[in-house]
Image (spheres, rainbow, N blue to C red):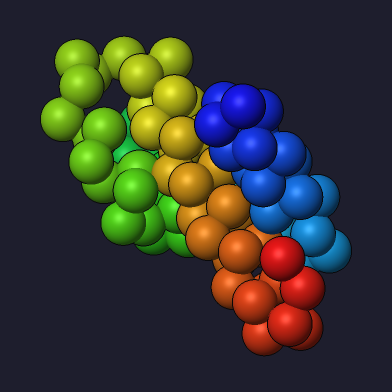
Length: 98
């Protein structure tokens, strides 16, 4: 029963409008950073810093993973989901619904 209650609360937190807007913003920033980095011939693009900052502090926890593109994407996705969950819970609490 506890597992279903937790998944129910997580689903409600992640389907909140503010959480979905935040997730969309993170997806746009990540796409922008990947495109800018791919088009940069010098190899000195710092565009990947922006998605990390947008998903901090949770993404910074996984930043110490091995240096690979998939690990960076995993850290950004994890940070975005954790922060969106917190945003959803806060939005629902401020509206007075549980």
